[in-house]
Length: 598
Image (cartoon, rainbow, N blue to C red; front, side, top):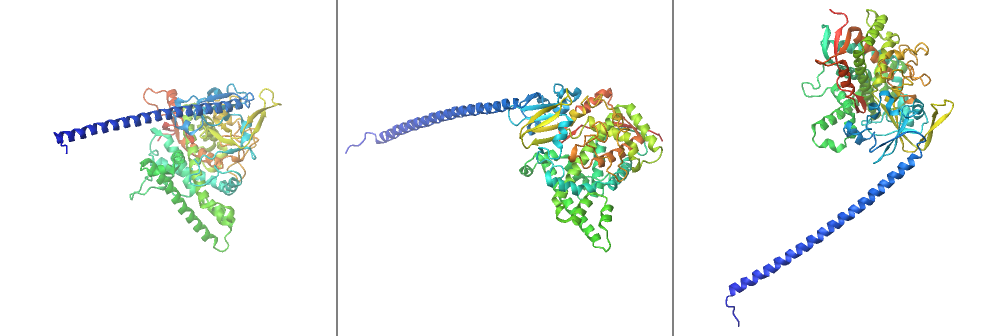
């Protein structure tokens, strides 16, 4: 038997050698694996790069083919090429100065009609290179009328922004829209407009007291946007929903419960965020998102309770012997009450709770937002144009003298309405209307060079069309000195137009498809055709009442900072324009001086 001379060393030596060999083999194995992995990754990256390049080249070829095909459809209509669609969610969120043609291109190129300077048909095509389809921008009223006509081959685009609480007049189409319109239209009547005027007067009186205006000769700095937004909100809440509102009601009571006016204000102010955020975002614990969610849920809960209350009240009245349904309907002052009443009297063809809430939401947002913005910019222009303001004041005094204005004065105060329309012309709260083509077709319009001939605009299925009110309102062929705030332009047509009356129970103040767009009866700022804003007379009465009450008492001027000029003041507020469903502007600060001092 052989025995190692030094078993321990030999044993350990063998073990160490074996371990070294094993370690070397492991390193070699690891190196082999790593090299193989690296080769695989490099090959994969190369393959992905090749596939990506092939895909990119294929996509470029695809977009190029579309671009070339669309070139054949231009038929002389100018085309602008953009990297991304000007009117898109991405364009909305990108910094405004980053894009030459962005979400506010119609506003940015409004002066001198520059967007359409080389477009005889007042129409251009926007073609994005990266994604999306082409868009037809038009300031041509003939094109607009065809796009909005009954039976048009364009449809509203469902963005989901304006129906977070249910279908409504603004978002529905076809038979559903006709049902909504048929039910809602009777709620906007002579009695409603009387209520609008009286409520505006009451709110103005309460506002003056709570803001501390009643016993002073001067208010040095008032943010008129805050005033007009609150006023418009109150009118919708009181006349629209029958809600009790107080000017100085705090947002939260002593028990931490939100006031309904705070809820309604937040709901109408956060439409864009609510419409674009996914539902899961509200579970992230972000306070701003939680507040928005709370406001919408609170509004919906309150309206469900309010509908149930009105339903119960009206059914009790109907249960009484000898109750006349027409007399009862005529006695209901608020729009919500009339919608609920129609459900009781008309049965299955009326609105569901969700549809009533959806329409109340759109009345609150559209009615409050657009009127408030227009009142603010109108007062800003009156502050800048003192000669126009002095003319307006004298015209108001000719009508009312020293007495309190009343609803019956409305028709005689067309000078005030003209100022409101001029403010809406220069600063349209809804700067464009958006539609999509449902099939290929041709729009034929009169030739600008030969009126007896027609020129064609080719439209293909899926094309977006943006009816550019900003552009139309700056069209020098329609409006002389279009950049100027000149309300009297609307009164030039009064002598030749058929006289109408909102204060009498007539089809008064309706927007006529036959009247020229430069006339008060044909003004297109509230849309055209059958989709004309159902609340346009509501807004006009509210605006005329508020402006009359304010301007008979106060002279308005820009609240200038030290060393600031009127031109700088105007440039600052005009350049602050943003699009958040509506065209908005930053705070408008005014100085008020009492017409007749104490």
